[in-house]
Length: 225
Image 1 (spheres, rainbow, N blue to C red):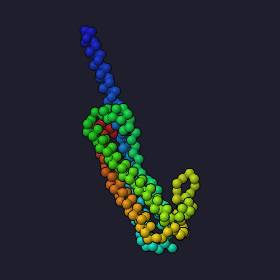
Image 2: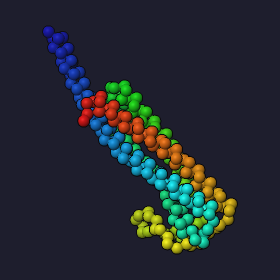
Image 3: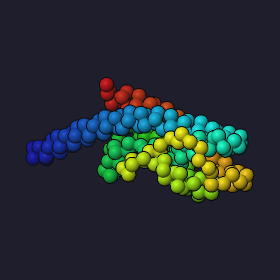
Image 4: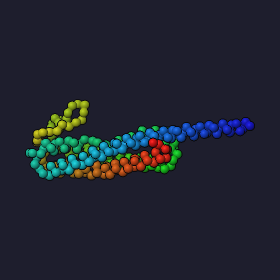
């Protein structure tokens, strides 16, 4: 009788622990869906900004090819300054980090969900590598800019001390250099960075599709609204 009582107590405790873990798992998945929805919004914004930067790159390359600097240098400064700004996608990985801190994804019992989360995280890592590459390309772009653009003019274009906003020029200040080789060097940096941003758009679209698929899967497996 004593053994039976102990055994029943063990079963009750085991059942309670299972119930608690199931509730924790479902709570994590609810949080994961919130993170994924926020990611989708961030991805849409990132794609929009990347497309804008690609259009700006094409416009700047066309202006340099035209070589009408007397009448277009203001536009060249405006576009050149916009292209120098950073805009990266930052994932909402709070839930994934909590899961990893709690011992990896072992709390998630559904293998298909774990596989999908891992796939999504791998896509984020792939995108991060492209963004890291863009950062190094922007450093090189900034270096080439200093040979074409006047720092004095750019300083006048900056507005305020608390916000990073570039005011649009309405005049056509002189470029520091109109040398063909230096312009070509800058053009090359623009083309290379533009190519990277195009790859990022592909990666972002794939990431968005993965996020949407993962949301559907989680809602189905955990009966979420």
